Amino acid sequence: MSELNPIDDIAIVKVGTSVLADTYPDGRQELNLESFRRIGRDVLSLEAAGVHVVLVTSAAITAGMAEAGLKQRPDKDTSVPELKDYQVLDGDLY
Image (cartoon, rainbow, N blue to C red):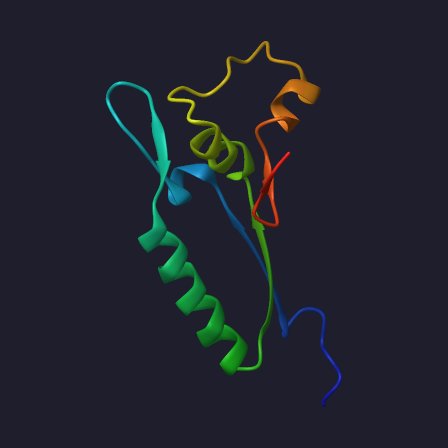
């Protein structure tokens, strides 16, 4: 295995909720599985080209909302501990 050049061989990719979820006129959000598939294919292509990818997302609350059956995102005044109740980590609802 070759040594990594931190600038050339690592890509940090931030993917926001607007890319990972669809928002409907009534305000509800659902995860867009095709977006996840497309990003997965892109990451595989980069890895095959020798680029190490760090993928960062911000859709944990949206994913948790879907699991909990919530139709609307908690409002901006919701506390951090309450928001954590809606996060999905490793497929589990916390």
